[in-house]
Image: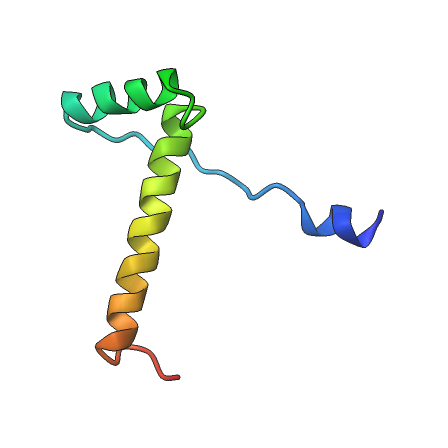
Length: 67
């Protein structure tokens, strides 16, 4: 197996169930129709990833992590 292929192994996913306001779902559906995102799952993964990244940066600024 090539080094490149090894590094591109799929991340293990976990199924979760969430409840979101209808307006969020309507807007996600619009983004899917506009082909901006491929699916609801990807929209939520992207939003969660961006939220976690921004919160991590905020916590670093507040001194919660040693640098």
